[in-house]
Length: 388
Ligand SMILES: [Zn+2]
Image 1: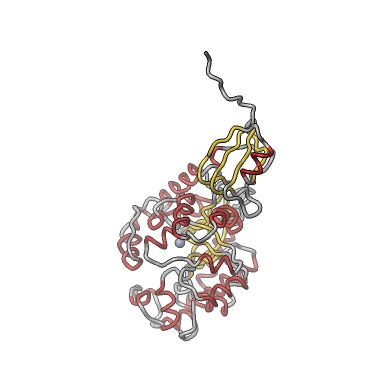
Image 2: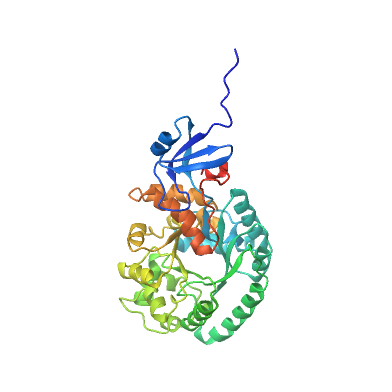
């Protein structure tokens, strides 16, 4: 007797808990019919069983979707050892203690890892010109490289802005079709003076340069804008800041002031920067974000590891804000794999529709970093890496 082998030409129905094809809201559960290595149909498994009664059925895995996008990371920290510590210990004990690990070698290692993972695009914060040169030259990287600028002294703003603009113009001449784009990241609303923030965001808005700004990561940031003090101010290196926080932001802190309201009133949201973290925000902040048309990138594992709180995803979704997912650096996020970020988010937000989380990791990410989405639709080749 010979065993009956399945006919390789007969269609196969692959099922999963969540399917996101790149268009629409997705299916839970979902199914993909594949015949001869080509997608024949995607959708609800019941409907597909009715249409393809002879298809062999097999559970493929938890999620079927195009490759996810890592919309916020720091590749130059990819040689760091991961450590979960409260934020105010993590900065000195990890970021500063391992600073010799930061640089081009780490960035190359991180970019290699993104390629190995089959990542669909990246939003990377680039801290040094050498790293920008190295990443901009890579053929396998798609997405946006945001040059990070800091400078809390308003009197140094014009000089810092001129230097940053000169660098950005040089890099933009090296952009290639299909390669990574150059963007700009004013670091945070408390490490960039009001004058520098205005110069950078006006320039980026005028030039159509994509932007990312870290905002409201730790609860102490809210306290700083409300009171002008608290742990964020007490833990700073005093030589690197003006005598008062009011000088950094060009106005007096007040009980109703938040980092988001400050940026909005400064005009810094006009160029629609992607706002990173947004964990410690008020309902008014969420409304401002929606009205400004800004996307938000959340890094759930990093926020948890650094005890920063939980991003209020349901409230942002209800306000219609586009949400994307990032890992942050491996030093706080543990890995560069956005699939692991989605898996963690599913445990963190059991009340949220898992289709929303997968859509954020794919479509939300592509919208933030400006890359085209790979669609799973009839006639496209099937790849096993679509199964997460
Ligand atoms: Zn970051």
